[in-house]
Image (tube, rainbow, N blue to C red):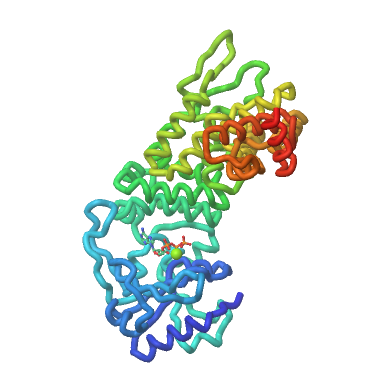
Length: 458
Ligand code: ATP
Ligand code: MG
């Protein structure tokens, strides 16, 4: 593994050296480098004060927040370099914000305030090591044995985990998120400390919890991540509705279910073929309405209308976690309609109604949820009925869904008939739309104009 240092980094480093200051690469960049991955985020730390950094970097540099971070444009379209003065953190009285940001005097102090050992490594950037490009030759400054933890695939807190999580509760979500992104496990002591402190996650703004949760769901190992949320007790705090599905039995004679609702939910997520965080989330919570709709009738377990209640719960979760309107709509609609039938005797009209309810752009996502649901319940990935249904979905979508999908619009109608804007224009378009849906005319401009002449002549 060789480290390719961009010219811009060399220039940056020369500027700091020339003014007698130190410059280190830190954080995710060093972690990625030590893991043999390319570096995307160039974050640096230095002994120079923020004012000094600005003076060294010149007029292109900008202060981007009050944490003493100076941004410096690197390349068109790339994230700017970020240079931060050594920091040391004092006390946190609210498990959220340090009471004050204090500049540190040494690199050691700066690394000590970082969250996990694999994030607390630094690499000295100096003109000397530009030529030595072998990983073994470049001294990574690693006071907490982050490299060893990388080899062991372990997330371990720097110092006393109990103390570190009581300083900043968001670190618990970060531990799970980084583990899911890297496919790592969480060190036992660190994990026990999360169990102890899970309740304090409520001190963190919902938006920040949401960001970490969506990163977990969108990561390479979402299933393992959600298992960690469950096992650590964080799920009880941030998604109590999902915690309640564990242990809810759904086995009935002659029925296909092999798992309780919670386990089935996890297995569905594991098998969901979509990479989209919201689709994965919908797959995870699709049966979230089951605990409250559970009934036993003649030895058969039923969950009537669980999808209706589930959609309501999904909406509540989305509101609580401050999802965007778009993400919220997508989430609850996928939950609401997940019980769709693939019966081959449905009319085209019924299938079109289904597509309209789900929203045409989420149809693919709805199918991904169904695949996860099937595989997560021990069924085969697909069935001939599902395959036929997919073909019909494509077929019926060749027809327009609203007047707006017609290949002619109001001005075409007015031009063709030489009339001014009036409700009549809309009536004619509606009539043409009906004709297209009923297959009396193709949705083609020429054919529609021809039909238009016929309608008005008669
Ligand atoms: P990525 O950017 O790939 O998500 P990262 O490790 O760079 O991962 P950032 O959120 O960019 O994560 O943070 C940069 C560095 O700042 C981290 O590597 C870590 O050293 C430190 N850090 C970030 N958040 C915290 C925190 N809450 N407590 C302590 N240190 C933190
Ligand atoms: Mg980063």
